[in-house]
Amino acid sequence: MYKTAYISVLLLLFTINTYSQANQREYYQLKTYLLDTEEQEKSTDDYLSKALLPALKKLNIKNVGVFKPRTIDSLHPRSIKVLIPMKAIDDMDTMGTKLQKDKVYMATAKDFLDAPYNNPPYSRVESVILKAFVEMPKMKPSPLGGPRKDRIYELRSYESATEAKYINKVAMFNKGGEVSLFDSLGFNAVFYGEVLSGATMPNLMYMTTFENQASRDAHWKSFSDSPVWNKLKSDPNYQNNVSKNVTRFFYPTEYSDY
Image 1 (spheres, helix red, strand yellow):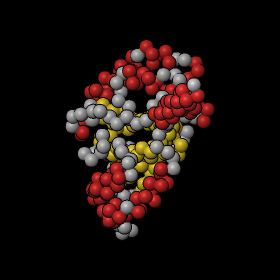
Image 2 (cartoon, rainbow, N blue to C red; image 1 turned 120 degrees about the horizontal axis):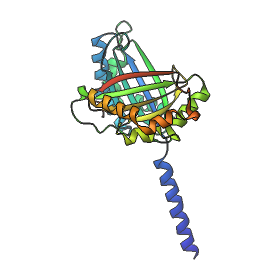
Image 3 (cartoon, one colour; image 1 turned 180 degrees about the vertical axis):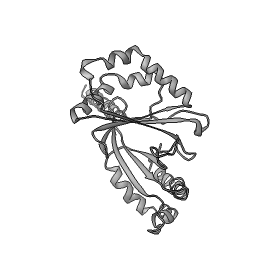
Image 4 (cartoon, rainbow, N blue to C red; image 1 turned 90 degrees about the vertical axis):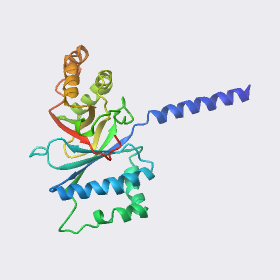
């Protein structure tokens, strides 16, 4: 009897641990390399494709997304965004230390890391740290096929006037069902994240993906026409929780993992 009870407890603990791991919320670093010239863009492309991404894979950091703006103008400067998933926030600290100990990485990245001060490979680097939403604790790399240049990777940042309104908007995605609605309409979300550190807090960010512009527009029409959305946006519990919506469009590089 005691042996049976012991086995039952072990099975229960295993089930709880498995569930906990499956629902453990990831962290993300969204890194932006701001570029002034095509030469800088090429240097950064070479560094990312030949040095950083291969090194991250050796650290078992997979599904790294690399994106470029679909349009380059005054509102959309030349840049490259890198989305790095992490199992724990401490990984961001240890990642740098481990990379410095990787002799292959350091040799391959030498020209980029040791570029002369008067010919840098970028103008600035920005970084946003996020924690995955409860309703989507793990990244889902986009399953899209077709030419990468045609794909629309839509990155949105919803800023709120106060911390309370920000928490309310996050709740609208989770408990309110906004994440579930996007999923049911086939938006192919890559991630939803609470911004823990960034320049426009308090805000949340998320990325959805589409085969092309026509598909993107059709999906958003289905969203705006959805009875579920129209009921949700009228809910008195979720009012005035977004003060600014910043929407940007990207496409994945050929060496991006998705």
